[in-house]
Image (cartoon, rainbow, N blue to C red):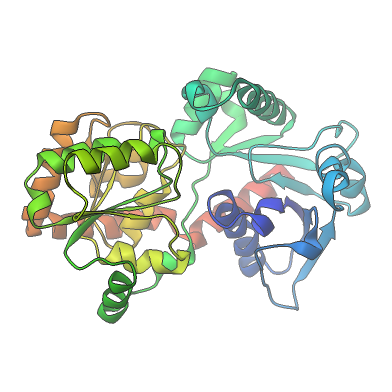
Length: 374
């Protein structure tokens, strides 16, 4: 089987779609080395994220060109590349497929991660929303199969873009392999010192933007009794939304107990998770909710939002609250901080829950999907 991947994100995105793309590409190569793989990306000579595979495997990396020419080829010129490489399958890993493929016999698969731009249009400029919607809808229409990253995304595809349900299959993702590795107490201690954390703490991971709802976490934390003995740590990239958070911290005089880590080394994330009492993730909406899975993989309890993909990922292993219910979140944070047996119970449930998100069965399932298309 000759399989082609849109590998741009795999080479150039450090997290998010990049991690997903590397999970698919490297997982397939490692577990099915007898297939032939072709990775297409602009500017492969300048690729930012290294990927590796055994030299014995049949992997071809195709440079689509630099600058505007590379982008043009990736969108409009892929038909000739598919024919040249005699591809059986082409998989668009980030919500999009090339155009102009009507004469190509290659089977087309597209992974759709979320329709946030339609669920929460106010978070996106009009131009971006219009482009994302048109690109996603056309890609789903052209695809022989649409892979939704969660049941929530599948529902959105049917409801918002009117994609036929029988054309969509849910295929989960996993998280970065580093979250499967044990972390020593020494690593935790060293990492806490590195980021100036000296006490027990609660952790929230994710870009500090409106949708991630960190202000609700701050308000719940300030209302609870936790701020007297426990710190609150936010781990995520800085945006203009942070000004609201900084103002609240200043107003409530929480400067000594609330920490913002905007530029952490990704390799330090497992230790930061492992050092936390529990994590909080009251996001308004996600296509998947990777911090929930990362918490469970690291054996750390998590409080997250009711409904949507969050209960899909967390199952019985997480605590759920209304995403904007500050009082409910404060109560659950106190309960989890003070109840060691509850935390232990959630950790045990988490061990069972994460099995459905392990790489091996997911890649096996994906290979079966490819085979069935042919």
